[in-house]
Length: 283
Length: 289
Ligand code: SF4
Ligand code: SF4
Image 1 (cartoon, rainbow over the protein chains, first blue to last red):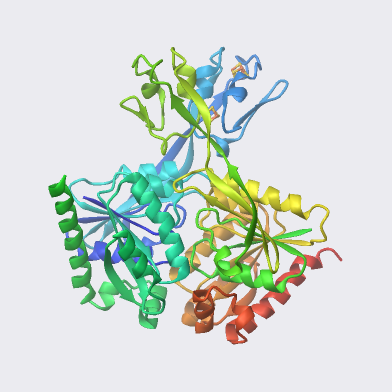
Image 2 (image 1 turned 30 degrees about the vertical axis):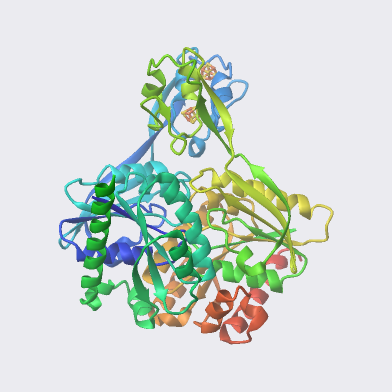
């Protein structure tokens, strides 16, 4: 079973939920798909046992075969190639690795070479299996690294996927194929606005989802009104507290400092199982 | 004309709050929200939208079912697994056009994919450009660039001397697009363990693009030990730490009401932000004289 944890926006407590839920379950795999800013390791302190480089193919032009016809550059939708008089410039960061320039070249002057864009790391954090991806600094394309991270999902386990913030392409890549998605939000006008964008994505992707409200207690009732109106379940509320903020700042998981929280996360998981059971039952 | 980009590595550190405060405190500026994935600045600055443009930053493959003979060649060659069971998945398609080229029946074409909207607006503090990316759309980098172009157009002929850019979170394509060619980057961080690790990564990005960087710590008193570590990191790197903003409930109170904290409060956070702006504006405009 794959449960992804997402939020319209960063800083809503996504990693808190993902790590604590993972720590509360047996036979579980924590998969950090926020490859731009992986933070789960701070709380889980895993021992990394394996590390794999993620490559993306980029064109390599063999100038001795090239007639400088410019067809490759004309074809490339991402302006990753430019043909000058007697030279070809390649901008690797722009290349999506589609392989089109190689296919199109009339002189077979293009081959591909692998370029490293990030890394996938695997390890253990006590009983938990841990996977994370890291995008190299200055690299704009996160999606291929997310894809490589997702290749490590163990179908025998409950995989908790920690998505990146927002609703952009890496998030879509992360959550597509999930059985359930938890959306984390805050009871503020911002939280509500960002949540609405995230809900739109969930509905487009047709992934069943529920809401977790973090820093509960400060804000207004708008969020609850919205969920009620839209028929979206609120599965858990985590109170606003300085204590929880302090634990977070020190990288201490909530369930470790306050073991009674484990029961809440277990109940959350059972609630999801039940909902999914119902969903399959009805269709 | 100077450009200041406010970034954070991670969302939720108070970047938008600061951008809004600077929008209030700075003179003759244009305000730009480049957080196109989750734009929030409009929720505090309440702009009036003057005009709206649709933006297509990407192409998408579209198939004509009548021409398709189901040979499967497109499915075979697509590296993004965007064609499955002969259907094109619009979320996966990157618009590279390889399938268009390979199809023997010319059944596939590339079409513009509307990816978002750009808004040209007015606030009581000056013009504001913001955008909204349609859910799940990529190429936010291009949209950011387009938003910045709109701001530049407005700046021409005006008496503006500053563009304030509220950057996007992360270190990926939208952030790079919001940093490119900017004069100064202000990184907002928090004294959490993840704050320090995010700070290191975003500083790496700014370094990579050779942009002068300043750092400020928001809610520094939540964890003094981590704040100290951030301070040491900045010293080591030779980056100026230009502000320490205390935890102050007035900030979230102002936010919850959709107001800018320096408009409604004179508390400790508001005062620290006033001081921060003094330093940042000096750094921005100092290099001229
Ligand atoms: S298509 Fe082939 S021959 Fe033509 S410019 Fe590109 S690499 Fe050279
Ligand atoms: S592989 Fe695709 S994206 Fe990369 S340079 Fe060639 S045509 Fe452009």
